[in-house]
Image 1 (cartoon, rainbow, N blue to C red):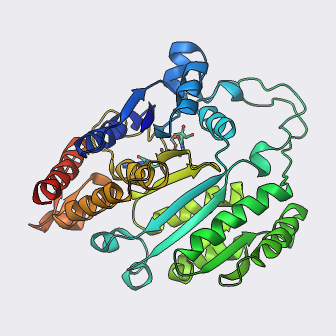
Image 2: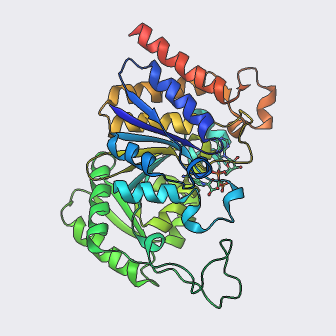
Image 3: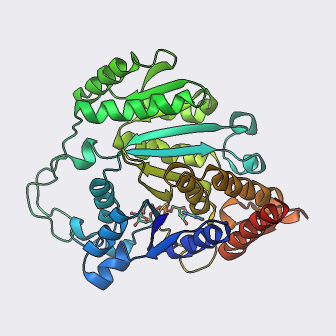
Length: 368
Ligand code: NAD
């Protein structure tokens, strides 16, 4: 099992270190190799996704990714910005399906900004198409950018497009995923305004004929954004395009209390995948040792399940995370000042949280 480990920038290095620690305590053999990506790679090699990093990722069964980016790179030309590394990896590895589960852990119901009854037991899956849409259309301005901006330009544009095979394959992924859950898919579009999304809706409806056991409904993206905060538990699997998925999956993430809890998987057609937390490099807290490593640790669990065919090890990590939360440990993002008086809750840093997950796994291995 070959894993390319790409920590990236900001809190990326801190949280990936904890996930690696967790993988190492499992009684499995991994070949892990680490490489630079994002701003760190730009500093060392002049490019956010150097050839050597790309090759490592291509040759691996899975990529464990931290996060990339920092405000200090905002002035770079777009192709050299750290975030381009992610787009490059998605494109080169053909990662077209992004799985973003939004699960509300029982112990964190109070961390959500929504009322407990709306959020308790939430378990939805957002499936975002990753390689098409406006992010990969024709670029951007009519003039060459200067420091990433367009001084004096009269307009800028990005074209939105989807091809039939791109929509068909993501629709199939969504219907297959729904078959393993409660057999309901909501396809989110903007067919009332955008030709691209009328086409999306038509193709999803056609593919649905092959999945008569799965219920399909369609929803406009503005309504979906509203329903996600009004009655999130009404959703099960949500499938949508690249840009809407980007936005809705962050919204869904926040329903659960903290973006620091949510893993993600991006898969290609042969189940090779890139696994990363749903959040970014959090430059505001980088180096402070307070970032929540659980989203990355849970991403490693998804990696074991989807790409490395080790579902039991994945289960073991996920139940260790639940045990650690039940034992009262909280990083700053899932800590509220109201917790301070509680004897059963304790505020911890990144490393202590990682150590606690390791200890919880070790306990189950010893018992087993
Ligand atoms: P962000 O997700 O990095 O941070 C948003 C907020 O959430 C911040 O207040 C941050 O402190 C907090 N946060 C994020 N992860 C946390 C964690 N694990 N524990 C505790 N708190 C956490 O988003 P941003 O601030 O908009 O972007 C920062 C940089 O990250 C930018 O350069 C952006 O382009 C980049 N980014 C990268 C990715 C990626 O690598 N896939 C994704 C999103 C943003």
